[in-house]
Amino acid sequence: MTAPPSPSAPRRRPHRPGGHLVGAYGLLGLTALLVLIFSLALPRTFPTLDTVDSILSNQSIPAVLALAAMVPIVTGAFDLSLGYGLGLAHVTVMQLVVNDGWPWPHACLAVIVGGALVGVLNGVIVVFGRIDSFIATLGTGSMMYAVTGWITDGGRIVPGPQGLPAAFTDLYDSTFLGLPVPAFYVLALTAVLWLALERLPLGRYLYVVGSNPRAADLVGIPTRTCTVYAFAASGLIVGFAGVLLAAQQQIGNPSVGLDYLLPAFVGALLGSTAIKPGRPNAIGTIVAVAVLAVGLTGIGQLGADFWTVPLFYGGTLLIAVGLAGYAARRRLRSGAVAARDAPASAAPPGPPSSPTQDGGAAGTPS
Image 1 (cartoon, rainbow, N blue to C red):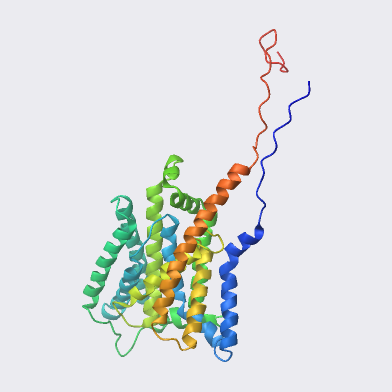
Image 2: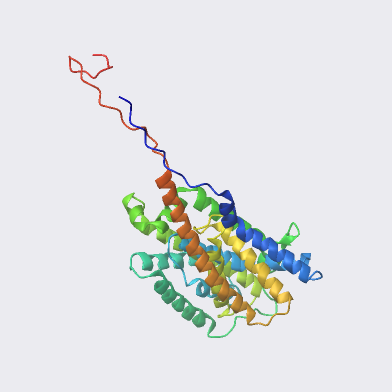
């Protein structure tokens, strides 16, 4: 008797590396395209070292804040208190240095530690209070704005005739290797977050918590602790951004932090469509900030009206949210297809071995 025909192997979909490359590096290509377009349109002003220095310097704080927004998004949460926390941090530094006479290193360290504690508070309220992160962080942000107004009494903190210590203002104004120092802060922070999220167990835990909290609980990942850690890291980064903002502005303005909230979320959400589409990541966030920086700089040099900036950010935010959702769904679909089409890793079990006369298994020594 002839053996029955073996079942045909499952048909796999053809691998398309081009689509993956476009999704991962499309924003980099868009950045290069924008640079080319503005260089051709503005040959005397855009492709210059002054423009490069301006972008690296002016976009450092938005980049740091976008990285701060990115960390809670990894866990599926949002921190809307970022702008309020930035405003509180920078006026607190000015208050401690100008009015209270603290040495600037102590004031900066206190503000950064205080930012981390505020982040822990946000995480505890979200996780243990079981309050949606939008509502919880909006509430704590409003309270931080009230504290900012109480510190400044509704006015500005202006240094005396002697000004601020030169070493403090050099945190933002100095250069290294011919480039603004804040650009190196951004690079260092990006490297730290990339290492923590992509190479350390804690980062993998955060991604699992963000993708499927129930599954994270089932495999023993401390989801609540991880979420608090994410908010704490975000608050610490916001405190550092507040120090940079104080060194840049050299004046305590209680309302300036709110201007950075929308750019931070646009960068973080748009960044989840680059490098590793479908998941927030540090390098993708920096690429997104670069796209925004080049676009805004080019628009500004073209002489656009002031209202084009919020229009640009608002439209980009809508596009970013849509692309992030599409990338996440595509990532889930590709994972499901790969799991369905993958061949079985183990060979099908053979017939059970027949027992021997003395009770041992066949083929085994008795």
